[in-house]
Length: 409
Image (cartoon, rainbow, N blue to C red; front, side, top):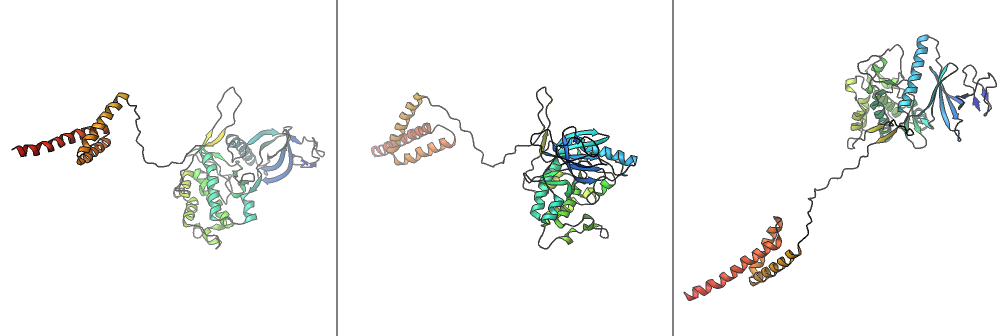
């Protein structure tokens, strides 16, 4: 089927049709992308599942159409700004393996369109409904995966501002999480307050300061924490916060067969602190508490170098960190060659020393002692063994002479 993209028409046409049979409009966006069906609709536009007709396999892709549901000039301007912003962010960040790639951005018949990579899989809201609440192990795995994406985004000075289960897709091909919908994203500028007349993000998950137009990196961490609470309880975030107590009561909604450790509970509590100063300030701080015994691997974003050669796509890589194994230090050994003449001299010295030492059994100990000292002091063993033999030789002579002198006396 080929779906007409004209908002007032949306007629269904034969799969290979080039023009709408109802309104006569071209069916292929940029003579390439064919709409198949509507898969989403919000206040700022529609989302279509589409196919890329320029490729032999005609793979799926996503077409987003800017179509504000209000004709107020301020609202239309805001919708246009958000749409351009999403295209810009995807162009900057889409080479990350867990962020959709921007395929095209254009204006067609007075409307803005962007085309992005199709991610096959369920979003976490769908997964929650189909399989039930997450347990601690699943929450920890979720945090580790999504935090690596946030770490990259924040390193590019971008705040997502709309983290929620619907905007996180578990990719079917590799089970990895993919963060989507960058329409609310914003470049972080310290000490800049934005106009809050138009709420950006989703109220259930948005941090208090974000609702006041004061988003920061920790605002994304707050939304991430609220997402975790929703996945743990399957309860609307508004119901997980007590206005009378002015505190979160998410523990009251935990299933008895789904206990959460004290360590993880502390992390979640700190993520959703109302006061920004009491909240985690960076992804690295969360990772340090989540995996205190694991060295964090900081992602690097390598942009292509400008050169006349064919462009190389930016790559998202991780530092090649090898495990550190502690070993006892080894002293280098200097290997030296021995002069043949010295070998002959040492042989003679050794034979003489052995004869002298055997003459007196006590000399064996003296020679061994001298040799041992020589080894410990890095001296020549045979030289000291020879000296020990000479000492013992004279000792034998003295022992033989002294008794004879005493008898003659």
